Amino acid sequence: MRDRCPRSFDEILRLLRPFIRCVAAACLIFCTSAAMADDYILGPQDILKIRVFEWRPTTGTAFEWVPLTGDFSISAAGNLSLPIIGTIPAAGKTLEQVSATIGERLQNQVGLQKRPNAAVEIASYRPFFVTGMVATPGKYNFSPGLTVVQALSMAGGIGPVDANLIGLQRDALNGRGDLRALEAERFELVARQARIDAILANAADVTFPLELTSQQGQPRIDRMMKDEQALFEMRARSMDTEIDALNRAKLLAVNQIDALKAKAASLAKQIELANKDVGSVNKLVSQGLTVSARQLGASQNLAELESRDLDVSLAILKTQQDMTKVDQDIGDVRNRYRIDALTEAAQLRDRFASNAEKIATERELLRNLEVRAPAAIAALEEDKESYGFVTTINRVIDGSAESLIVSDNDPVSPGDVIRVERRERTVPGDSVSSNEKVAPGAGRRVARAGE
Image 1 (cartoon, rainbow, N blue to C red):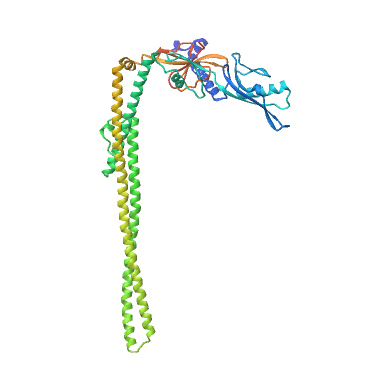
Image 2 (image 1 turned 60 degrees about the vertical axis):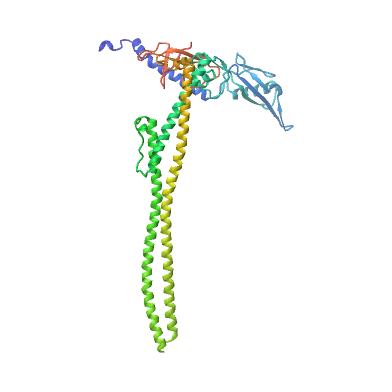
């Protein structure tokens, strides 16, 4: 155990060197990304559009310095050569700094009291270059936000330089991608069809076919089935909520009818007593034992009770109509959800037919490619584990040239030289050579010393 311990500072440094390389490369990439987020830094071959104005309060007008208006290119030495004010440094500066320099130089040169306003914007960025294993290497115009994969697309993509072969391979790749997308769409339609079948069958749960259940464990398939099951349960809860609300209204109507019938029974007893009272009063009036006013009061009381009884009967009829309407509404709710399911089922049939037709077409196109260009298809089927394409960017960072091994979504800067090389894949466990600095992150991204 003692022999394995470091014996000297040099040995400790040798053991820590890979870690130091990782940290250095990570810092380099971070600084590069931060610089891209700042204001654009000018450099040779950038073309600037300049307009210089001076406000003259005596005339109340803006005077334009015509000689300083136009497009001007930054020279290889990093300078702008402008009329009147001469040469000013521009490389390594921002647009705001150049604008301020132009205004100050013109003010001092001409002897103006106030500094003129110089509007400076980029008319054309300096180009970037693509070389190596691409279809069309060369110089290309830069645009803000450009990524590595976009730049390589402008150069025709990575791979053999045979344009015909590249085109056929691209067609094959696009066809395979479209076929995979159509097959994924079919799985979605199958999952949706299972949900519709469960709704139409009034099932308590969705039963997915073997075509999907046999692929359980795949995130996309599991998500499809989970989403359709959740949608089925949500619609079932929504329908049950509507029906429960209508059933509560129906129960309230039943209770109301019971109360009205009880009231009608009470009124019937009162009417019976009132009839007896009217008969007694009529008898007494006929015998001259009471006055006719009492007869009138008894008749009015009987008439009022009969009117109230009639109102109760009408209220019972109206409540019974409301109950019938509730039953109809419950049926309408069920029919509405069923009609929605039937409509969706009809749409699914059309989509199934369209999907099947597209899948058949894509497969036929791929078969035609296999017949027309077997070499192109065979190149796609090669063992890609034995080699790979490595993309590097040669870039000037803080005045020194650096070479970065980048991924597809890394940003491209003006003046970059993008190089695509085909390299053998490293065997797991191989150490990185001493002139490479490995940066942590997705994939294998390396920042190397300037080549």
